Length: 112
Length: 108
Image 1 (cartoon, rainbow over the protein chains, first blue to last red):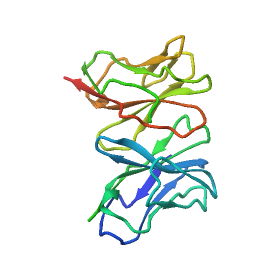
Image 2: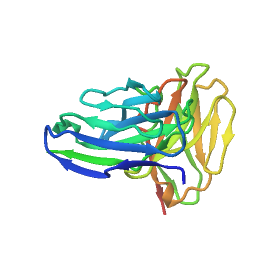
Image 3: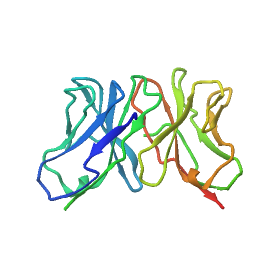
C-alpha cells in the first residue's frame, strides 16, 4: 500500500531534549516536505527536499533540521525543542511537480 | 502568504452539491490550481488539480473560469464524510502554500 509513515504519532517531551521525528515513504517520490499546523495559522512549511542530499528552507525553518540521505526517509530533528514548537507535524511526499502530495498521519508534539 | 482567497466557512445539506469558490486573481500562466482537503486533524488529502480546462475525477469536479482568476470545486452529492477544511492552492514549480481554507460542514 502506498503510504507515508511518521513516528512517533504522539510525543510529550521537555525543553531542550533533542528529538527526531521520522518520516518514510514507499512510493519512490523525489519530493518530501515537513509542515507544522497550529490553530489559526494553518499549515506552514518547515523544510522541503527535492531529492537525496537536496534540502531547502520553507517558511518556518528556525529551530529545525532535516536530512535526506536516502530517497525514502526525511527525518525532522529538533536539536533543542522549546514550548513554541508544540504543534501538529505532517510529512508529505510526491513525485517532482507535486501535483498530488501524499501526507502522513501526523505527529502531535508537546514540549513542556 | 497564500495567493488564493476562500470563504472561511460554508454549509451544505447532505445529498446536495457543494460548490466551494476560490479566488486566485494573481495566478500566472504556468501555475496550476490544486484542491486538498483535511478531515479533522488527519493529513491533508489531494482532491484534484487543473490548469485551464475543467477537470473531473471520482471525487469532484473543478471549474476554472476562462480568465483563470477564480475556480469552483464541486462535490456533486455531499455526504457527512465530506465535512472538512478545503484548501485551494495556486502553484507552479514552487512548494505548495496552504492558506486557511474553507471549513465545509455537511448537515444531515
